[in-house]
Image 1 (tube, one colour):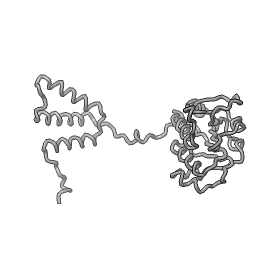
Image 2: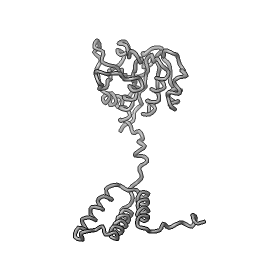
Image 3: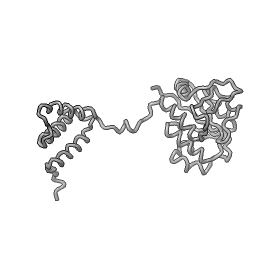
Image 4: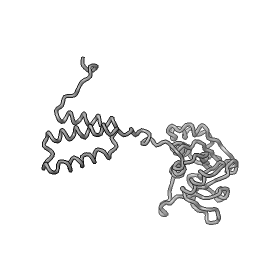
Length: 247
């Protein structure tokens, strides 16, 4: 995946500090840190934004204020207006995926415009954009708040980037086959002692099933040690205590 300059999030005439903070939080979740505010109703900085940002202070600290939309996007070559389609305009309408692809392949700066909470972007604001971006939404209830709109498009952009995925990063490496074989051998021995393999002619088929179960899960060394310890406890084998644990 290619990495390009991340888009600038432009909030046009935002009304509530809490919503600015929530938008900042949504941005930082997906690696966006540059916010521009166009004529915020209650001025800037806004004391209500910080608590709502839930730690996304870097976004608020770097936020800049502009008088007009034109000023906010003056250095951008690609601009998307997040809004429902304006019938009186011939501006192209794209979905979030196409928006993200365009931003990723753009050589210059890009920006996404979001309008005021109550009314959205005005026609004059949308006219400054290269395209309108809109998401599929219930036509009978198209009520997205500002932070929700930001997070939807920020997430779509993030899919084109190599952002860290905690669940992947924290995954333990698979154990060597020898350790898996040791676990299977211990389990088979315990089952044999308990008379599990019956009838005798089905023993090998049952062992094959056991091996399939334990070889397709991707056990880590830590997990194998834990399971083998459980088997020892269930079969009555005493745990070996280290010298350090003996008082």
